[in-house]
Length: 182
Ligand SMILES: Cc1cn([C@H]2C[C@H](O)[C@@H](COP(=O)(O)OP(=O)(O)O[C@H]3O[C@H](C)C(=O)[C@H](O)[C@H]3O)O2)c(=O)[nH]c1=O
Image (tube, rainbow, N blue to C red; front, side):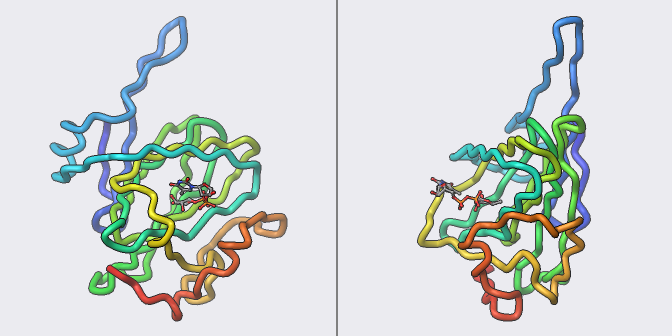
């Protein structure tokens, strides 16, 4: 697995080693020891999630408040997404900055997003399967987030003309209304 620091402190990109043969391929998708050696972080993933979405679905921008903040190791096992992590750590010099990355079933890249970031993605293909490991459990009463099309963040989503978003996400606060718990 190749580890590369993300554009913002705390973010990491992981590229698995793929062992192909005449049957197909094999890869190790996560190793706790290697993750600690490469990132210096001792992560304890306690919940794995999977979502499937059609094309032009946007989920986000979400995070959970402490003490249920979640670090997430995300990947796409079918289809493709434009994934984004927004730094919402109040004292961070990159507060309000973000990194966008395409994750897809071909590049098999993984994106590690620590607590203190809002996370979301927009699907680029039909039947996209998004899988992720979380360092804390789901706590709906601690959920918060930021509106996907906030004018201050001005995220350069691709064509959003035919986009589908949940009613819940449409009502998320704007960035200037958002009070970060980090
Ligand atoms: C997140 C979650 C949801 N659910 C249930 C609650 C709802 O009945 C249903 C759909 O939930 P939601 O609309 O919040 O799902 P997403 O919009 O995909 O939310 C996720 O999308 C963004 C991209 C994230 O980074 C978060 O992990 C997460 O917020 O699954 C659970 O039972 N457990 C869970 O951990």
